[in-house]
Image 1 (tube, one colour):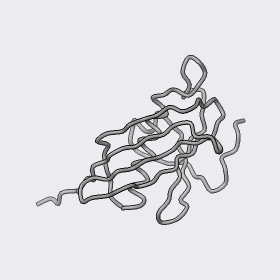
Image 2 (cartoon, rainbow, N blue to C red):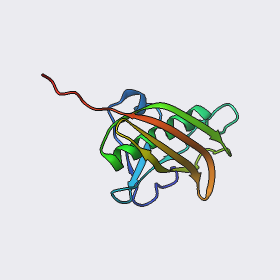
Image 3 (tube, one colour):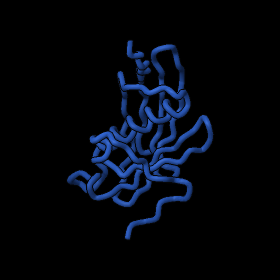
Image 4 (tube, rainbow, N blue to C red):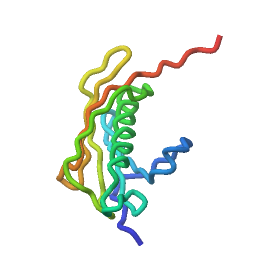
Length: 139
């Protein structure tokens, strides 16, 4: 049996087929401004060196950044650009948490940055620009 999920986190359910293939992902709503996404590194997330795959970190970060925007603004968004920095490895069993800040928001885009951490150790940094999706009414 794996390590327990920390208190306050619940598994994210989604119908997005891609997202169902790279989890499970967890989150904890801290308040109206803050949501923390998390991931327990499992064998399916590893590369041939038995470290978390860089593409998995990028996928998880992209998801966490977009979720933070939706949580804080109520608006869905899509990625325009994301820059990534790999700082340290994560291994099977590690619990990764995503901490995200919205830097600036305009009418159509939002600038975001985030850190992925294992405990107090930052393993990955990202900054991104997302485009808000304004749903068109059916006329």
